[in-house]
Image (cartoon, rainbow, N blue to C red):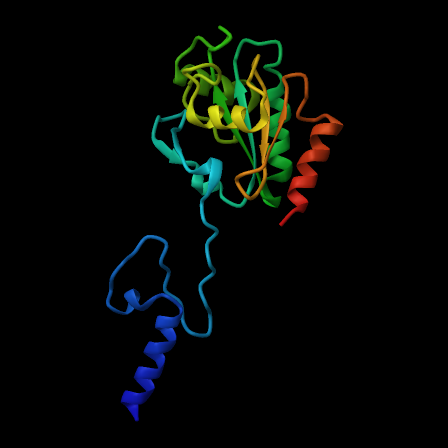
Length: 203
């Protein structure tokens, strides 16, 4: 009888996809759970988020897959631009909506000759001047043949390549659909916020 009970429990665990946990094995994305509490099924990382970039502060690789299922605002930034004050609005946007599933990703670029400092210089400026807490990545190109892979894909999908700093792309939760906004679209503007709230309302 004890054998039958154990066998029944083993079958139940196997059906949950965690048989490896019984043998003490580990597998990426595999989480142990009791039959009474099934493990949640993770959303697959697809589309635009299937890539990695170096974090601005320490240049450690960061997978964008960690933002799967979120509404993602991607923006190319610069420290010495007429639109640099938009950092304040972007940080306010992030603070207001991050618990509802929004993340802002900043990509400093010197494509327009207004971001000449090192990654450390940029990180210090963002933190000390605007208190930026949203994720920022190492300086890279966002336009032309040397554009980083994410911006190449965003430009291809929207037909809108950054022509100046603080272009914004809003990626839907599915990691595929994208809406673009040019530099003139302030992150606190009614039109921009309306799009953010529309995207957040979608499951």
